[in-house]
Length: 298
Ligand code: A2R
Image 1 (cartoon, protein in one colour):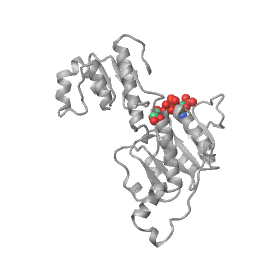
Image 2: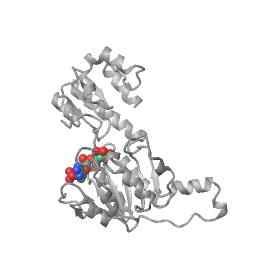
Image 3: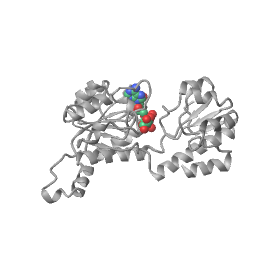
Image 4: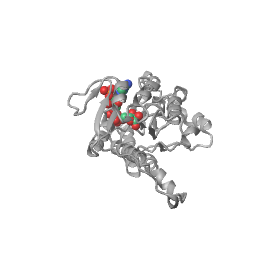
């Protein structure tokens, strides 16, 4: 992020709302002159304070933190950073799955708590031979599928439409896919069409031996049902990088051994955040030079 801000400062006058001691005062002072936004949350209320805004360059692939309808209504351009974070998110997804199936964080705690001296840690489960259902076989979903296939998993997928040429069985119905899956990875965009898509019914279909992996957005899962079913062992486990009201995480999850938790780290590597920052800068630079945008949503 620092290198992104430095690069922006070489090209533009930059005001940092995120670190401002009095954001409202800063907005009153400079809001009327702001022409571009890099990253961050953009509400309709914020837009009203930025009458000259021309472009918002989101630093990530999901743009659910932006009121896209209000942005479009003002003819403001919107960009994201697709592709450059695909490998990092896919890598962490598989990492979380191995961590949970082999109980890696729990094993680490077991040694630190000096419990090994009293007896063995136990036998867990492996990914090989299991069926992985992917909700959202997009850029990231396809890379997760590649890595899972290399681990000898059977991949199936669900999306709104079947993808001709995808070498995996397609499920038109997410409940049916959950029933057929040992693992279910959620990696679709967070928007009105996906809010609550992992309902109690989907979790019931996944069942006491099934595991949910959410790498997308917390509000795509019925979190109350998830927690309740994990506690009562109606669901086998969960590997979660995102939460409904993050950074708040339900207390009940903290005491469970059938979960692995991660603080929204999907794209958070030095390499990937630098590449994301470069794309944000490239989009803003292109816009203000009157050139085509690198990755326009609209
Ligand atoms: O539905 P399709 O066939 O267009 O497939 C897209 C799928 N998708 C959905 N699947 C089920 N129900 C929906 N309502 C729905 N809406 C979209 O999600 C597609 O296969 C996938 C998204 O792929 P990409 O656009 O290539 O996104 P990418 O780069 O893989 O990132 C996915 C998401 C981001 O939006 C972040 O929220 C998250 O991963 O980190």
